[in-house]
Length: 116
Image 1 (tube, one colour):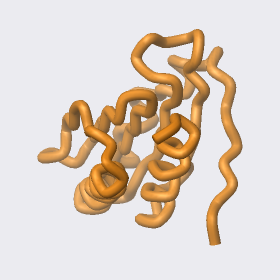
Image 2 (cartoon, one colour):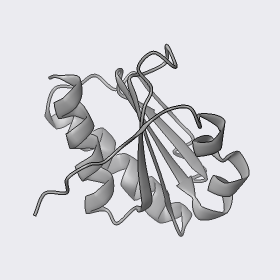
Image 3 (cartoon, helix red, strand yellow):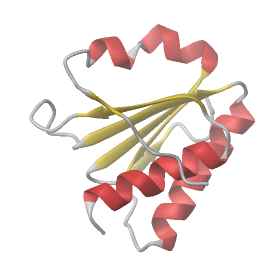
Image 4 (cartoon, helix red, strand yellow):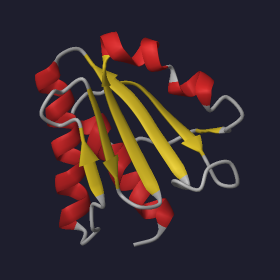
């Protein structure tokens, strides 16, 4: 699966579960961790967990090995490492505290086209 397809799949998964304020950062040449970050939030721990599980399920369905998942039990900040794409799903109360968009402020934002 190409990075572009993986990014689209992960983006669609968070969007399908009604994640809020979805931001995609192009990390190429900025971070060695991943080519893209998806950052979003939800209003409850249960929704954070549901969004993260959908990302994991969709990636697995397409044969993508999920390298690491952290924070799923607490549902406050889940990191799903899909290789070239890392998905950060925050509880709304945590997102502002960590402010990854500011931390990685030099990373260009990507506009994603939502599927109907």
